[in-house]
Amino acid sequence: MANYALTPQTIDDYVFYGVDISNCKLYVWHESLDAYKAANVWKDFDIQDLGGVEGVEVDEAKKEVEGYYDMKGIRLNEPARGQVNIVRYKDGSSQKIVVK
Image (cartoon, rainbow, N blue to C red; front, side, top):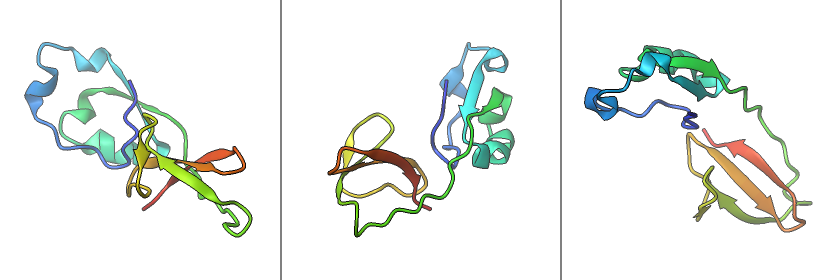
């Protein structure tokens, strides 16, 4: 399973009650590895590197934004902070960004 949040969510121990999470792979962004390895509950997973999200430079004067979406494809009014967002441009292109 993958968790795309840059900061581990606070969850209770009972969320995965009865599941041997040490046998479950959890993919997180490279930038978040240390945070997940230290976080309650998440640290018990077999944490794997999902890769990095590099800074993206876009000349907004040339690319007009059509909309912002979360990783599930749900349209957002504006990019969500601390998460990966998908930006769709009017020229049909898209990219992933992280707003810190």
